[in-house]
View 1 (cartoon, rainbow, N blue to C red):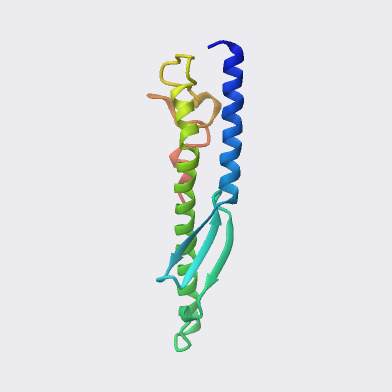
View 2 (view 1 turned 90 degrees about the vertical axis):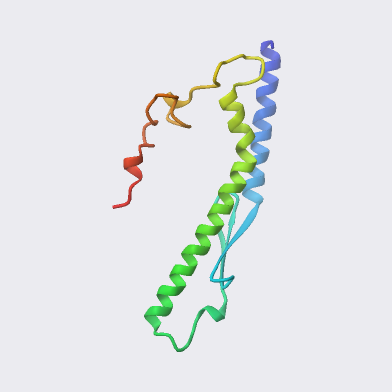
Length: 142
C-alpha cells in the first residue's frame, strides 16, 4: 500500500468515525426501574436527556422520608440502566474502530496492532502497566 492509498484509507476511517460519533449523539436509549415507574433517557454518549416518574411511584400513605429514599433509588437504577444501554450502543458503533486500531491498518503488516499504552489511552500493552490515570486504585470510592 503506497502513502496515497494509506492517506485515503485514513481519511475514510476518520469520516466513518465522525459519522459513528454523530449517530451516538443522535441516538436515544431508555432505562427503567420499578417495573417502568421511573424512566431515564440518555443519548448514545450517556448524557441524560429526560427523566420521568409515574405518579404511582409515590404512595400517599408512606412516610415522606421513605418515599424520597425510594424515588432516589429508582431514579438511580433507571439512570444506570440507561447508561448501560448507552455503553452497549457505543460498543456496537465504535467496536469496528477499536478493532482497526488493535489490528493495525490493512497493508501495514504491523504485528499486534498499535501500542497505545505510551499515549495514556487504550488498554495496557501485554505485560505492561496501565496508562497513567487508569490505575484501579484511583477508581476506588472512599
